[in-house]
Length: 371
Image 1 (cartoon, rainbow, N blue to C red):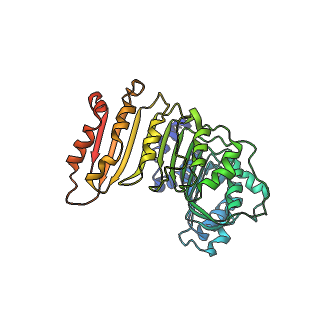
Image 2: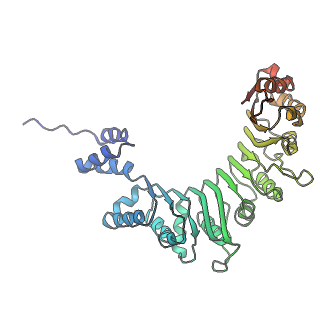
Image 3: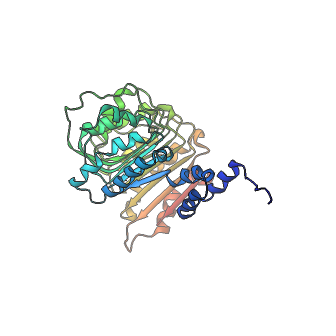
């Protein structure tokens, strides 16, 4: 009998890597032999999504019967489609579940209501310090201190998404003071919530004179709290390289307006949510105060209700700012969405806007899209 040829393990691993999204094939590989099992499990268990109490119970039973599985889990997504108080029992078990996953790096909480951490031990909360990415999407907490406790425990998060997060009670005395010892090493921050200012004031800004956030996406809903947003911009300082910003259409220009004068290394700036006619003066102010010499791309998106109102935006000021030598390499993208009306001619609007930006047109750094 000819001797069997045994492939080097690294070749086996590479072959199984090509099957990363084929669960049936990966399951077959995991049953083939012991040598193939670790590589197959790496892809089978890398991401886990629990959508209810039954999923949670099954996953807990799996970890009980095969504890080795825990070391393969890198991402855990928790979602409850029912979003009722009855989900509270199994959601309460999530922190202790996270504590068992020693190599978990990403936690997603999606569509959860009545989330409370009051019965979670400090030791279990401490396990959140292993996380490097945290996503909140449509999460309704019992108390603002639940949010504070969770964020403070996840002290090594580099990527944070805070999307439509609310709470029932403004505070809860159960936790006491849970302020972080030092600012988290954030590199990417997404903020889109009605309660953004309180989250920033209570959790992030008190401990952070400076941040290393390189990518920031902000849909700011609180028109009376622009000062908090400016504190965030100031804390990001020169580290910030990419910014997406959208403000309410009813910003009061008599109050404090957003400023990017401290963000001197900004490379990409996207301004969205402008409505014409409407309050757009804040965008002109923002652009006039730019101090970056690294800007490569500027994008401005507008909703225009009437073609006749297109010139309520200060195009001349925009052309004047970007005609400076420091912005010689900057490309400007204008995205205009015209309201459906027989008098709104996209071609006419495109030509009118292009005509008001002569410096950029001459440099060939202008793109105007009108739909």
